[in-house]
Length: 263
Image (cartoon, rainbow, N blue to C red; front, side):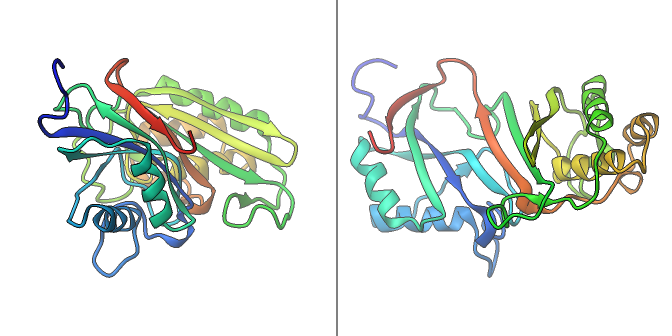
């Protein structure tokens, strides 16, 4: 870009986070409370007119977002006061972390993304600090077996067995960049990153890995589930409240930071 960048419509990008407990997911739905509707409502209050936002992906009902990137277009210059004002309008369970401008006017929050990452949280003893943020697992887990099964995900490229039925995906192919378990006291976190995810994929993977951890499925059987490309062969979805979208990445230099919340 050259000259004054504010002489024409700019594509802005927000980094937002939210507690998904009160929402029926990201995407606007009829007669449902969603993150997108809440954000667009706050922006309408600020700008005095309708503003459409496009997210990097769709989280399901009850899933949390540590980082979801969304884009929208405006002609005027936006800066820190906009972020402060928007955070003042938004409810306590939804916040703007940073404001960027896209260097390419064709940038797309969803289609320009090159990597996404999730964490799924488990707790292995009852705790009043984790309801709504982690799944409580009451039985012993074989972490070594779960770790081996998680590592095996990188050996595959197609994950139809972990895709929500009627997910309307053009392809079940994904590039898994990392998949592993991390233990921190009674908290057990599953980390997974990929270029893209299928609908319901992470929760289905976690539900199946828990069968491995409970001794109900071997590593060989886990691999056979993946190779079957059949959702009925995999385990049940883990509950939504343990899942967090944690990161969305784009090509280097595609976004220019304008400001962060609180700075």
